[in-house]
Structure formats: C-alpha cells, structure tokens
Image 1: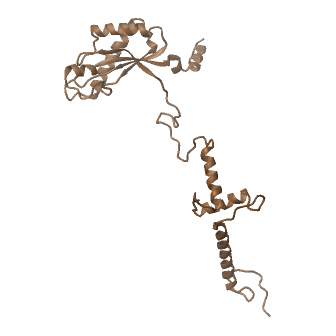
Image 2 (image 1 turned 45 degrees about the vertical axis):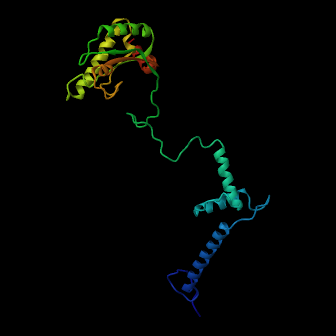
Amino acid sequence: MAAKCKKCDPHEICEECPEWIFTLADLIMCMMGLFVILWVMKPSAEPKAGSAQSEDMMEVIAAIRSGFGHVPDASSSDPIDRWVIERLRLKLEGPGDGGETMREKKGPDGTDPEVTTIRQGQEAVVGGRILFEAGSAQLSAEGVRMLKGIVDLIRGHRNIVLVKGHTSLDDFPNGTTPENLMNLSIRRAQAAADLLVQSGVEPDILRVQGCSTFEPVLQRTYTPDAQIQNRRVEVEATTTLVRDRQDVKKSTGAINAEK
C-alpha cells in the first residue's frame, strides 16, 4: 500500500500527487483568467434598471478594459463604452479639477527655494526724456527745466518713482567696456535724482537705476541726432506705494527696541 502524501511540493513526486497535476492546475487557472478577460472585453447588452450590471460593475469593467489599453469608440453601441464617454463629457463640462495638471508646477527663479509670486506694478513716464551730451552726466539747462516740471508732479506723493539712466553706443569710443557704459548711466540717473531731492522730492520714494545700452529708444542709429535719443534719463512713476515695499512689523519692532 502506498504511503500517504503528507505534503504537496511540486518538486517532489509521490504516488498520490503526480507532477502533471500541478501543470494541469496552472493551465486551468490560465484558461479561467482568459475566459474572464474575454467576458469583460465582449460587447455588453444594455443593462436593465435594477440588474446586476449596476453603476459599480460598469466602473469595474471599464477600469479592467482601460488596464488592457482599450480606448472607447465614440460611435460604439457598447453600453460600457457609452458610459465611459458620458463620464468624460460630464467631467469636461463640469467645474473641473481647479486647473490641476500632472506636470510639475514650477515658480520663477528666485533666491528662495520656491518662488510663488512676483511683484507687479504699472509704470508711466513723467515729463519726457532728459537728454545728455555724449560721454557726459552733466544736466543741461533744458534738462534742469524738465526736472523742475517733474518735481511739481511727484512732490508730496508716496508712490515709488524710478529714475532710470541710459547710455548710447556713441558715448565712448569703440571698444569701451560694459562697465563704463553702466557707470555712466548710473551717474546720469543719480544727477537727476539729486536735483529732484534738492527741489523738495522726498528721497525715500526715488529708486536710481542704471540701464546702460540695454533699453534703446532707437536701435541701429548712426546719426548724432538719432543717437542722442538714447543718451537720456527717464523718470517713471509707479502705482506702488513706498509702504508696500517696507516691512512694517520689523520697523515697528526696531523702534520699540530702541525705546
């Protein structure tokens, strides 16, 4: 009499558990899985109200089909395909996901690891352009007159005012360094800002900037009359208030510490 099989290890052959049994079991499982897949992928009949093919079942079948790369056909009569297309339509016509996207959201480059906002503002040129002679940062009589008129427009206001100096390619001989052009643009802007302060404009609203040759009014100009338009200072009034750029909490803390 054959001994009883106390374990069913597919690697060990005994009289009651022949090796082919395990191969047959694997084959049967594969066939059952194939039948399930064929049943899911076949066109379904129109589900009746209250039948077993409910909303949840349709969602499960649609998910299985999607896992096998099935794409619903808009002209298909299959109820599962029509159900998926209807859900897609409702999602597109609905409120959506708040603009969410699968792409990584990146802010603009900045000094902080994650920059989420950029300071924005509107600017308007006040009083036109104050022009300079080539290579000079000295204000002309016409420039002084124009700055005096600008004083009346900005004095007493608390909006930030940009005083921007510019240079032209004919300010220095060919081969001059970018540093010379930038320094000249800053000296022109500072000369205009000094006159504004002397005329009663509060210095804390002024922001002096040097723009070198990077913001020409006229590009590719070769005549002196045209190039002089680039040798200029522009005064730009912004809509941003000075207090909007100051840390009120820190300033208050410093005053209290002094007391």
